[in-house]
Image (cartoon, rainbow, N blue to C red; front, side):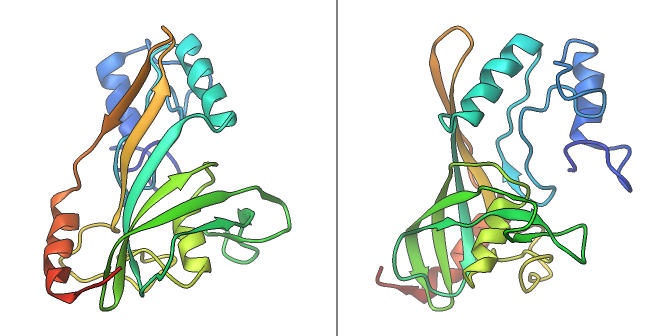
Length: 209
């Protein structure tokens, strides 16, 4: 599901559903196109997303993202075998010729930092946990492709996907933040069925980490 209306996707988005459910109670900081949206995930990425129901909550959450104190952890299956944990610290900006894509560039770009941790290696793939310091558009997908390990199922930055795979294997698994009432809260989301199906198929290809 697309998060907010954009060219080619003016209906059937998460924002359309939120407006139907919440009416005018969503925060208006991001304007009428993105009410309540504190951060977003790509259409083919599964998992958790935070929505603010008023402006004060939105400001508190946005400040935590800005200060890098907002916990965001992802799980992904990537192409190839990664041999050690690492960090990609490479700025991301709009692709020069394909305006729908992002890329690592030092022209008109913004800082982007992604940490990744090996969970399991397979013959031709690696299951990794990722932690974001920044939240740039397509950040994980761009960074993993940049180091030669695109996300499995990524049809834009990778090699496409098996026909039965109904999304890219990138899942927003954990979100942690300080609620406006001062309490730290953390949420965890189970992997979707197509993701676990891929892991099951890879089970016979396990290798030592």
